[in-house]
Every structure is written in C-alpha cells, then in structure tokens.
Length: 200
Image 1: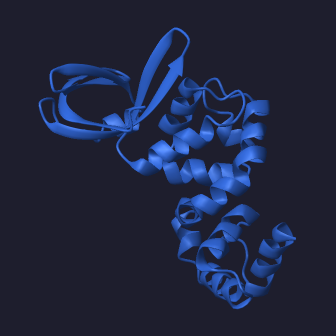
Image 2 (image 1 turned 90 degrees about the vertical axis):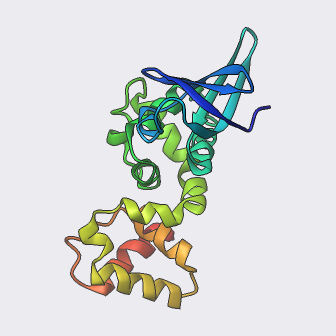
C-alpha cells in the first residue's frame, strides 16, 4: 500500500493532481480545499495517501496532512460511506467544523453535503461521535464560534470539569458534544449542568 508520495507537482485539475515520482506520474484525487494550498506546478510536494483497491480499480486519494487522511479513513469505515463520499465530506468543511458537526450530531449540516442523506448522516454520528470526539477532541473546540471559545463561562466550565477528574481533552470534547449554546448560558452552574447531562 502507498502511504505517501514525494515528487514534483506536474499537473493540477479540478479534483485531482498528477505527481511525478521518479518519472512515474501518479493520478491523485484530492479535496479542493487541500488543492488550494498546493504550491505552483513544478514544485516539490509530499502528499499523504490512501490507496483504495477494488476489483477493477486502484485509486489514490491524497491529503496535505496526516490528520486529514486519518479523518478520511475514519469516515469511510462507516458502512455506506465510500471514498468519493468521504472526499466530498472532507471537501465541504474545514476539518474542525466537520469534526464538530459529528460530535454535536448536526444532522442538518452533514446531510447538506451532496450525496449524504439524512440516514447516512445519522449513521455517521451514531458510529463515529464517540470515536472522533476522543481522537479529535482538541480540534473540536476550535469549531465553536469564537465568542464561545473565548467565553469566561466556557473556560470556567472547563476548569470545573478538570477539577472533577476529566483531562483537558475530555473536557473540551464534552463541552462540544453537549451542544450547549454558550452564547446564551450566563452562569457556570448552568453550563456544567448542560455538559454533565450529556455525559450521564
């Protein structure tokens, strides 16, 4: 299996690139968001690869970070989510927003992606919410509006959760997973109650 490719960026198309590695051109499917961060054609690049092997097809999917590839692999582990749909999900939102949508159970946002129906979105949340919140908990908090991330109430709720025995990553994940609107919560007590009610 191919884990990564390092070579010359030979061609950029709508949804794929060609990377020349020692004279061999590799066709690599990529999300547009990652393609927008690529250097100009002729530059040296390194892409993290997922190799999908089927009976009559071998396709390469490339990402500019290991984190993006890891999330992609996690998404396609869900029944009914193939590489193309996984790539569509990765391409539709920044990673932290996608992680937050899954951990918060935002079915409406997930099902807004072309090809992702309500049932598929619900399956994503059911199967991945706990797994993703553990792995990407630190990133998930970054998906909150800045007004909530910087809110003294959020910071105090985090401190309280840590005092109760949760580590920082678990506390951040719990806050995001609670779905609480910290723009409307005015007391630490109310915030803690909202978060803990989802943990029970």
